[in-house]
Image (cartoon, rainbow, N blue to C red; front, side, top):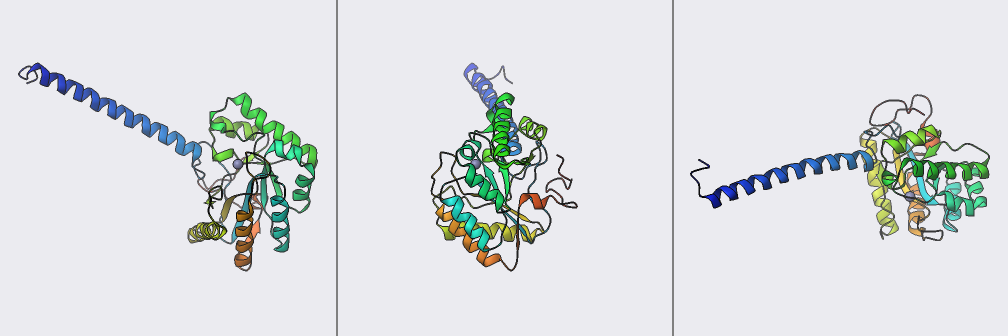
Length: 270
Ligand SMILES: [Zn+2]
């Protein structure tokens, strides 16, 4: 049949076939790449190793703030948390912590949990193991120098990780922490919009019988001084509206005995 066809048609058929198989292998590659990025980027994916997200108590809310310490905004947030007797978690950038040791101590002295958010905030998924180790160990060293206490938690910037990231973190004694609610506070969304997103995420988790871990920012990785007043206003409103129906806990409190990580139902391994 092929031979009966004019050459041009056969050629067209052949190139069509080639195009088809190219498209198929491109689709296969896209699936593989997509799967890799799901595993490496999706906050609740456990494919590249277990990460701490939230417990199974729908009344628990872990507020987590990344990219600080940040002049003015971190202090204002600490005041608001204190007014509501709420505890939170701060994932600090090492090079900012080194510049603001007193602010780091103030966060710690107020009873909040401090975690490692790398020294320079790179996408660790693209970094060689030596750089990953350097980012984490230099930040641990700076924080431990300021606090005279071991740092136990780590949040990868952008949630980006691969097996080497989680393995190195664990070797350094760090529990990787992700999240299950995003307010998208890095976008220009007014405080009311941030509050809506937070409440929608919490309600969604409550319907599924699980606690919430909210990704928020009191700083910005580009430098100290980023305006986070919308996040802080949304936090104040959330604390006001939820004070009688939720407990605001740190990620350290989520790890008490009996607590399960989501995704695997297994105890976090440290
Ligand atoms: Zn960050």
